[in-house]
Length: 288
Image (cartoon, rainbow, N blue to C red; front, side, top):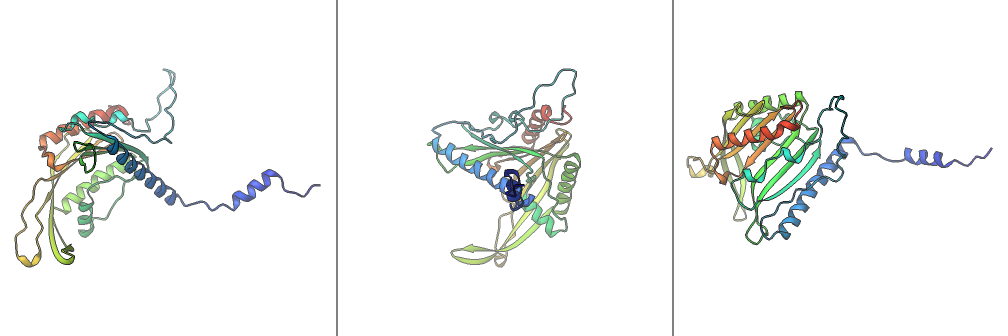
């Protein structure tokens, strides 16, 4: 009998020697590639733009759309989030915006990080909510020559979550808002190449709720003008306020963050949330 290993035996032996990365590392590398793709797309679009332009990137590794099923077969649950689930650029009261976007898997739902820092300080531990699928867009206002610097007019993330995850997300957000009506942050900042103590103040309010979709919250972030503790000044409210719209429709959750300088009123933001909910309906499970 021939003692030399066969081709299949050599392949199996070589595969046993391969060091496979952990699942957490695989997800981290995927998120890194996703963010790098968006950054490169931003640079390319802004460098080439000479006026109003629209560029929305697609993940090339996305699975192909499911084949059409016979009328008598029950349709499967929707998985990926289509592009038309996002707000159109016409909803932003700024002309000539540039639209950039991305899609992902296993992304964590991004809310106000400063609010979570307050929650950590007040005993509300972080509760990361990971999505099954996600899609995002950023609407940028370019300069007249189409080059940087630019201003972000609106960012939107849409996440597909398991039902229990979406329920915990809204419960956690309400717990943070209850725990953080006001929060002081003492830190040292760099001024004229020297570190100096500085104190800042933040406040959060629930401006509205249950105005769109199955669940919705309009969060107002009120910053206060910072001042060093040695000067004895009373911290005063600054404007404009930061606003965040969080809306759920079925298993989809969207987070909208308009630029505070747009100075949209609460009624405008509620209407924006209702428009976002209507666009999510066809892609949600269950649909509207």
